[in-house]
Length: 335
Image (cartoon, rainbow, N blue to C red; front, side, top):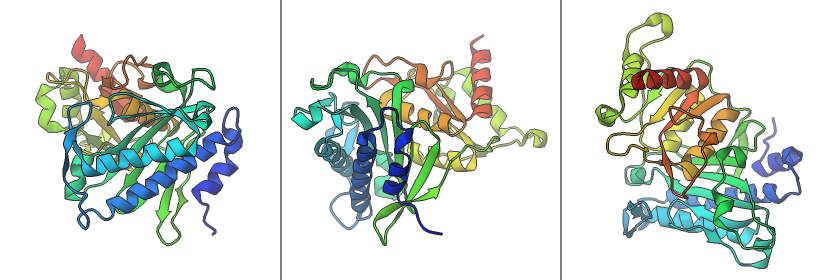
């Protein structure tokens, strides 16, 4: 059976895109090029001076790893010079970038991304990833991008995806017409279709949460985790606990194997720690397209109106049945 490359697949599906003109196809191709550059660097970790921390922090006050900085620049360069976006927002930077070149002013899209999710795991060789979200601009074509272009609900996304750098490198994305995964074939340097029409299993058997913080979570979350650990063979319980601490890696495993991921608010961080625009919205879009659900425990993630570029939110994502059961426990805990 012949391999279908990402570029071939994108071109075949171009008609799926609203107002298709090839711009979104080219933007996805630009992202895949950046992913290959990042992958090449990640694979040299330990052999070059790219491990460890920089002497800088990002807007969240987190220490930036060297590969964070490299990945951020690789993505910014790819989308800036590709010319398919008028602006970009990165988790690593306080403000968005409005590209002032003429070809960018005429672009139809903006992109938001987390250049290297799970970067604290770099030094210990655990899977890490890149997450991206694409919106159609709301400002007039020809103008500079403005903040309203980036403060759109997740339901307004036209495409979203992630790249996972692990035992193999995969790019998974959706344009609102299902979810497809592509594995990087090193011998030809191309992403090739390996996981067509990805779906969450109807019934999951994995739960993912940082249990070290469980006592700081609200009662509903504690009660739901207790259910996950209870013995009830009729309902396939107990579930298996799996938590890597790398959002992309945890999400990817649960998408394939079937499981719920939870990063709730805590007494210390009542709004959670994950970023709505850079992490939760793109993964929520993918989850829904894969037959799953994403919630902050009360409402649909994609319905949240963002008020700040770096807004945080509690995040629960996985098969619909598991997420709805967790939501029910949260409601009970509040009553």
